[in-house]
Amino acid sequence: MANAPKPTTVTKESSSSASNLFAVLVIPLCIAIGAALFMFVLGDPANFIDNNPDNHPVPGNFAGMAYKGGPIVAILIGMLLMVFVFSVERFIVISKATGSGSLDAFIKKIQGYLASSNIEGAMTECDKQKGSVANVIKSGMKKYREMEVEPNMDTDQKCLAIQKDIEEATTLEMPMLEQNLTVLATLVSVGTLTGLLGTVTGMIKAFSGLATSGAPDQAALANGISEALICTATGISTSTVAIIMYNILTSKIDKLTYAIDEAGFSIIQTYASTHK
Image (cartoon, rainbow, N blue to C red; front, side, top):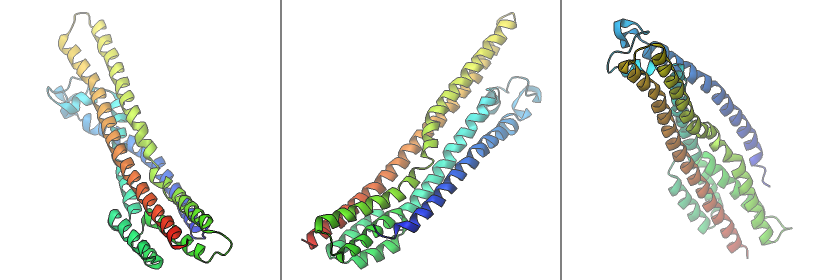
């Protein structure tokens, strides 16, 4: 195997640690911000009758209704913030992995250099492109160049060695792109379930209040139910945004993987056809 991926391993390990630290810091921070928004924005006295948060919300005031949904609303706001923060973070990471130019144009240039057996030109193009895809392809090119002067292997063995090197370089690069996607995947389910939990607890409080009040109060019951349903709406919104962003991000990662596979196949085919 080529010597190039060795320093890459160190880089990826440090990047992985940084990504894990990012997740550890962001999750409690988002929950804290959600709690602050719940207390000071949704719980603003101006949102309630007589400026008293213990009273019903001002008619039509959505913020006051959301506040009456209870502390679970604060957690749901924090989850929604997590979705946005982790989505932006993954977009930045994937953008860096793609490189400085169009990925499709880069792959076509690499294939053009390979067609003319210009390995040095292809490696120079990788240096210009940068990013994970270019790193993997450059690693394959280095192995290609090593195999040209390897006297103890036949063509099939050399092609297999090049393929193995590309696969190992891909194994180093690609998992970094999928980090923190598990957070989004988890929020898809947890957001809805947390919203339902808030709704159930809100309904219990609404009907308990109705039972202890003696005479039925339709307005109070309607307010209680609407406040409880705020949790469901917020939870479903969180899950919806999370699953949309998760699918967008995974499709981008799949595109990078396909580009690496396409370029790797071209490298191996070029070596096999020129060293028969």
